[in-house]
Length: 363
Image 1 (cartoon, rainbow, N blue to C red):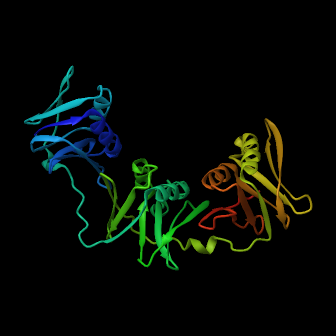
Image 2: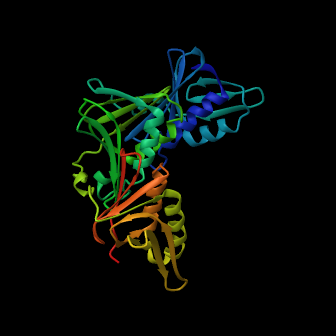
Image 3: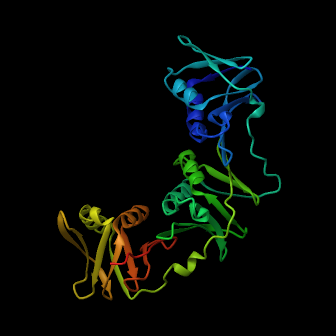
């Protein structure tokens, strides 16, 4: 293998894929990235057996070939080189990396043993705007669980309901759901949230289209010159729609910035009690107030003006409330609940596409 490539392109490709390489695995080759020529292009790939990312970049290839090299070393090394042309020249399992002023040899492992995810041959295929998809994923993935003892809750559910495609995630304490687009395609995919975090790093803020191909075992996301393949989680997702309240005995509509401010101030006093704050909504005073008590530090009550129907109080985790408010994008937010032990629903007043549910704490 012999080729020339720009430092900028190689650095970008290594940045996209190297994070997936697993240095703590039982297979040493999984700590490596696969560097391979194909059709006068260079592909850089990494996998941990559950997810694989491949980034294609332009290169001037004089000899075809492939090799795997340590991901961490290669990424750190290339990122520290000055911009310009880099020559990669493979001799046996040694990769010679040369620029105007640098000459290095990186010891590699033959690529024959590098695991490749099976191709999706008979899958369904659909597309979505990258900008919209990125925003939607950011709103939902934060609610997924990291507790491996309940694998289904560590996933993001893609499913169709009433001719629309939804994505949802829950850790049983909170739930986020976003309506993506109208579709006639039947979709039911449970994708690891960790893979969706990797996809978020790849997705830019442009309007580039994301093509999704899936079968019963895995799903492939194609974004420009990058491909991400991940295994699906096997298991039945809970029927989360039953949890989402449709009507409220108590509802407050207020400026999102006001609710963020009073929650932030109250959360400072709630650290001692694992973030627990009590929210009082008063129809008589047309206000929402948040109270927090720290036995060692003191206590705090912060109040915001709101348009209120019904009165009541509920105790929530302030961190979950701030996460939900950060995921909402409108100026005004609706905060509704039906009693101190019932779920709370937050949503933008103008957009009905996104709903965020927080389960109450026992006060």
